[in-house]
Image 1 (cartoon, helix red, strand yellow):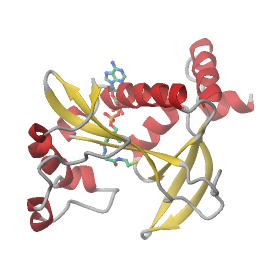
Image 2 (spheres, helix red, strand yellow; image 1 turned 180 degrees about the horizontal axis):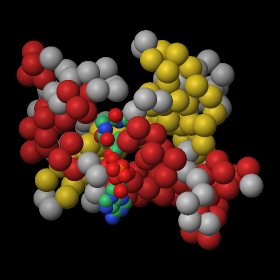
Image 3 (cartoon, protein in one colour; image 1 turned 180 degrees about the vertical axis):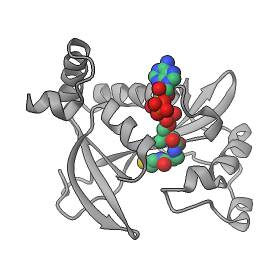
Length: 181
Ligand SMILES: CC(C)(COP(=O)(O)OP(=O)(O)OC[C@H]1O[C@@H](n2cnc3c(N)ncnc32)[C@H](O)[C@@H]1OP(=O)(O)O)[C@@H](O)C(=O)NCCC(=O)NCCS
């Protein structure tokens, strides 16, 4: 379930942001003094979703207008919407992130028809790269930032749906392969 954050999510936010595993490719675990300053209701902003499973927060999905990518953006004049995701390590490996992100993308496609979504992730972040591809993001470019290679991908509503249909018909083919073939 996706919902807005509540005060009871604070411990999970602190666990998430303080986890070295979660922070491995996103700037590291936040230091204790910073975590202590976590607001009473963290992540209460437009575009931030709490992912709940069995009554507890397991992660967050973010759809926010930011400018994290390279200079030649898809729609730099408007500021694109970036997808971000952070899940507690105990929730990795079950497909929850994929399910939650797909629901957020679906919602966005209905709310802002035709608008692309971008995603920046370190190319060394295997789990994140697999997730991005599964969701239908296609590589636009790679660039260096924060001392590492960053992967910049784009998602277009219609293209993603088409990629899914093609993948169903051709199991094993990835998004780029089907797009080229
Ligand atoms: C990136 C991140 C969200 C990916 O989480 P994840 O759980 O691996 O992602 P998914 O939801 O796609 O799950 C995929 C895994 O679930 C497995 N799985 C198990 N049951 C499944 C099911 N019913 N449906 C789909 N996948 C399932 C898949 O086989 C896959 O495992 P594998 O990667 O070992 O092959 C997570 O690693 C994370 O929070 N990382 C730290 C934050 C981060 O780096 N974010 C990126 C910044 S944008």
